[in-house]
Image 1 (spheres, one colour):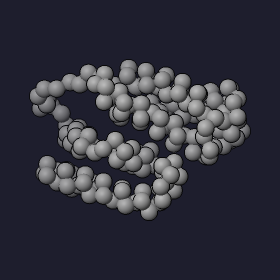
Image 2: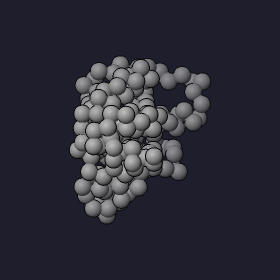
Image 3: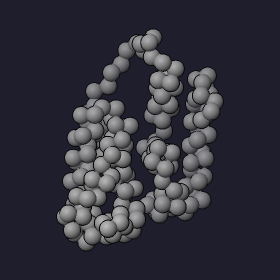
Length: 172
């Protein structure tokens, strides 16, 4: 049985198919949660909550081919809600001088992404971290593909500007 068939069965209410879907997409969902929450324990908690939310709402999915992206959006929304609530403990302080160059670039990128609106972060994450096609993003967001492209272009320009002001990462 292929992924689309599993998705169709899950949407129709087949519990075993839903479990198979969660197993298929567990890794991508965890990566998404860790990317936002920066903490494995919180990411595991997020996975549990998103599994419950997806189970309750799977019947609302219109296009079985986009179930994975639909679940990732649920995860991103959940994570952003957790960050807004300030539930997460954030470590602040001096940056350790032993942090490597790539770690510094990652910190700069994380800082730049944090300057974006939640909707902008979602677009960037879907397109560049989960490699979701523009057509799929457009259909999920109920906006034209051209709008997705123009928003991505605007967001990337903003990120380049932010990173350029920092004096690094000209290759974004």
